Image 1: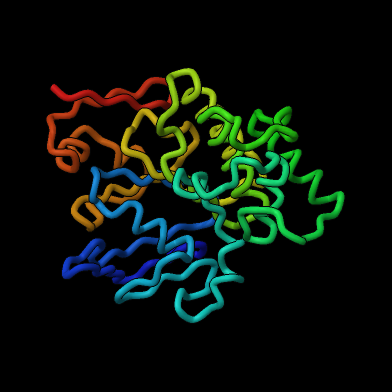
Image 2: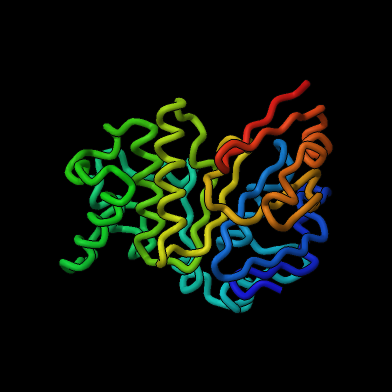
Amino acid sequence: MGDVLNLENVTVRRGGRNILEDVNWGVNEGERWVILGPNGAGKTTLIQLISGRLHPTSGTVEVIGEQIGHVDLSELRPLVGLASSALDARLPDNERVLDVVRTASYGITGTWREEYEEEDDARAAGLLTTFGVGELTERKYGSLSSGERKRVGIARALMPDPEVLVLDEPASGLDFGGREQLLGTLSEFAAGPYAPVMVLVTHHVEEIPTGFTHALLLKDGKIFAGGELAKVITAANLSAVFEVNAELKVVNGRYSATAH
C-alpha cells in the first residue's frame, strides 16, 4: 500500500472494453514516479484517476487517505496539482500570466470576482521564477511560446501547494533546448526539500528527469512492471512493452533508447 496514492484492483471500463484492468499501485512520500507506455496503454486514464477527475468502474483509488467516490472532489483536487496540454488549452489567451497561476487557488481557469492577498501574488510570482518565467507575469498567456506555456502550467499546478504533482507529457512539443531546460528545472525542483510527490507521464525515456526514483510501465491497460527506476527501465522491458528490439543507454543518470 502507498501512503500518498493507493490503487487496489482498479478497472476502468468504457465502450465495452477495459481501458485499465486490475491495476494495483502504491506511491509513498518522497517518491518520484515516471509512467511510460505506448499509445492506448491507459496512461491518461490512470492520471485522471489519481487527480480525482475520473471514478473507477471497480476497485478503490485512495489519494492522501481519501477514497475517490467517498470524498468531495472539490476538496480533494487541490491536493493533486495537474499540468497537461489539455488543461493548458482551456486557459484564456487574454489572461495575464500572473492571473493564470493565481486562479488555481480557487480551482478556476479565468479571473472572476475572487480576491487575492499579497501572499497569493508573492507565491505565484515565486513559482514563476522557480520555473524560469518570472519575467512574464504581465504578459498575456496567448502570447507565450509552447515552452513558456509548459512552465506556466507547472507553476499553476503548484499554486495550491499540492501533496502530489502530476505532469502529463511536460516535454511534448518542445525542441531539444526547451526540453533539456525544462527537465533540468524539474530535476532541481524534485531535489528540493519541500517538493511534493511527483508523477510524470511520457512516451520517451529521454524525458525522464534525473532524480526520479520509480517507474511504472503500462501495456494494454495493465501494469507490465513497476518499482525502482533502474530495475524497471531496462532494454528487455522496453522491448516487450513497445514491441521493438530496444537498446538502452544510461549516461549521468539520463536514459536514451533506440531500436535495432
